[in-house]
View 1 (tube, helix red, strand yellow):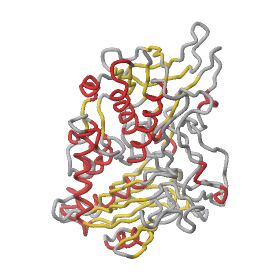
View 2 (cartoon, helix red, strand yellow; view 1 turned 180 degrees about the vertical axis):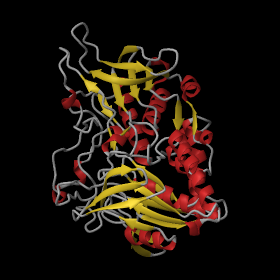
View 3 (cartoon, one colour; view 1 turned 60 degrees about the vertical axis):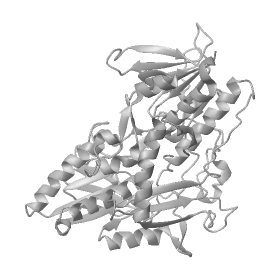
View 4 (cartoon, one colour; view 1 turned 90 degrees about the vertical axis):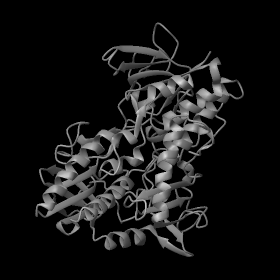
Amino acid sequence: MARLVVLGGGVSGHTAATFAAKWLGDEHEVLVVTPNSKWNWIPSNIWVGVGDMPKNDVVFDLAPVYKKAGITYAQAKAVSINPKGNESSDKAFVTVEYTGQEKEGQSANIEYDYLINATGPRLNFGATPGLGIGNQLGEHTVSVCTADHAEHANHELQKLIKEMKNGQKKKILIGTGHGMCTCQGAAFEYIFNVENVIKRAGVRHMANIKWISNEQFLGDFGVAGVHITSNGHVVSSKIMAESLFVERDVDWITGAHVSKVEAGKVSYELLDGSTGEEEFDFSMLIPPFAGVGIKAYGKDGSDITSTVFAPNSFMKVDATYGKTKFEDFKASDWPSTYQNPTYKNMYAVGIAFAPPHPISMPMTTPNGTPITPSPPRTGMPSGIIGKAVAASICDMIKGKSNTPTHTASMAEMGAACVASTGKGFFNGTAAALTVYPVVPDYEKYPGTGRDPEHTFGEIGLAGHWIKQILHHLFIWKAKLKPFWTIIPE
């Protein structure tokens, strides 16, 4: 019997584990290690963050789902990996620390034949002074990165709306909290849902709403922007985004590195090296992401973390690392099998893998401060990657191959994105986009880097309906309800 250990129960890890358990059956073991007892459909956290959806609608308990699937479940966090075992055993193992109440604080070594690192990110609030207190809720700002964070954000937002109803004008600042952030899309959704909720509350005239982002231009989204075919015309995401911001009377600051957050004020540096300050009464700023900080040790106990992980603590995979100039970047630099180059039975999926370089052009201020969006690796790509890696491992466990049999390069992958710009069954709106490929290939598609026939989108009510349907569809899938396997990633 072989054992596949999956570290993490988010979109990518949950997808990998559930498909692997289905394909392997009872002959082999799939074991999931995750510190969380609940699964969270993160794309809907923005609705929780404005009070349009209760937290319980975006989470569910993992234990009964894994029991139904025949998956062993350990509520714990991974601390370190010994890919060649130790001096007393040649068996690879991962050391975990339990977080569930029954074994909280206890440690154990879990042996594995194959390992998938799907730990996701560490929310690195500490990278910007004042952005938050460790991984706790923000001291001066709020977050929608988790369901609990989103619930807290809504609590603070409702207090703000009450004060506006009492005649107090307010300043709202939403965006990214560091020059190297990703997930601009989540902040984009949140700012327009906040604008929508305030409008519905009848106090839009009492609020000044402003966007602050590390993007070089509106609509960059960490993917160098896109050119979208809409109603027979090709429109850049920059024009589409700017039109939406102007229509909703939302001002913006781009190319910004938030260097410090204080009570009611952020300090920032722009790409030209100039600095500024922006006041706020309510602010949601996405923190930068880093790896969770797993260590790696050799058989003799030596620290081999730098061999297994990149400096940002994300796991190295079959990518081409080391390029720093945008003109040298190629689509072929991106990984396809997600196999660790040193230890062939280890893989990393979703946010946990180290990307070879940014997708957007790297930029640095005259003061040496990097202001470049980190590449997004969430949502649809995460699910596709998790499923492909699970398929490769299952084939190897069954003896069909000695090497990965499935690939899922983001440079050869299309993705659909539905960004809410306001909830409402009859008057809600969302930007629905398909992008192909996710990582632009300027050699294959000169100019824009993407196929214009498969990169298209529009903003409207239909997009909101799609996002609402996807919310229910993917939670149904994650709960392994009937026909879950036919629902695409």
